[in-house]
Length: 429
Ligand SMILES: [Zn+2]
Image (cartoon, rainbow, N blue to C red; front, side, top):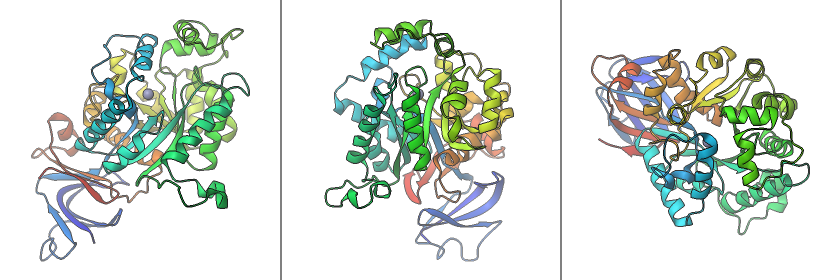
């Protein structure tokens, strides 16, 4: 065994039940065994190469931040609050045109923020794949979902956008031998950053055409990769997608998108995606399809969500930043989607701390605290395709005598240590 960890409380990663007086044994990247209830004669010594012993502490699955844009981290505190989405977007597009060193510095700092706040897994939307090496460097388990957008008119930009994504894959990750076979060669192939893989992220149905969605999702589906997209984020998006009018029409025209003849799709953004565009690929459960926001899901959308059960990501603090209507938590629960939580980027959030997301989410009138903790941890693992016994763990100091989950929300709790893929990535005491 590599590690033996004694804690007073342990959250089972499958049942999510809290067990008392537990010794967790880690071997390689897995939790190899869990000894419940009381002492092992001789204590922890001899059980593993290294031991950690905590009295009032809970060991639980590490947080999975299911939506962020690490390559916007340099815009922390640079974008004013109170903008609508169509006002905010141009500021962020301008903010991308910064020196690469500044962008990479922001990503490096952001990964440190993630590790320091008990996050062990990240689904990152990445324009150039820059985050991969930093997630790996900080020991995080990550998916860099490569953003593709455009490809509006058939045959125009979608091939080019996927080729660009492929170039990033070739330069940042190992050549895909499964797909390319002998042609992949071996000499100068880059090695895959440890713990980090790539996925795809068609941007949003108002900015990305059907053909590109189908290319990106088809690739993800065929290669069992994660695919994530923004959808139904704002009322302006609902208006533009259904009728082709409003502030997003103006924004896209200003950005040079040719919308002549476009009069909307006559349907909601979620129905467009799940029904018309991706319908043929979808089964009864699709956790590796992560729909981000879904803030303005309409009634017909909920039936489609219930029929296809993707992961749906709520970003509580970013949601509040834009002043959206209350998030449709009860409806999503009823639809049976795999609820996950994310921070979104530091261009619309004050931090990347998942406990702060949980504290705000818990104020929602329909909140169930245990369900929210699942959303922030094991549901994210499900979306990422992480094995259930992964040694991706965070150990938190506990306030005395409290219920674990309520206690963690009520007062500041220290992160004692965390593990990702069985490696110790943070240790405070
Ligand atoms: Zn986003």
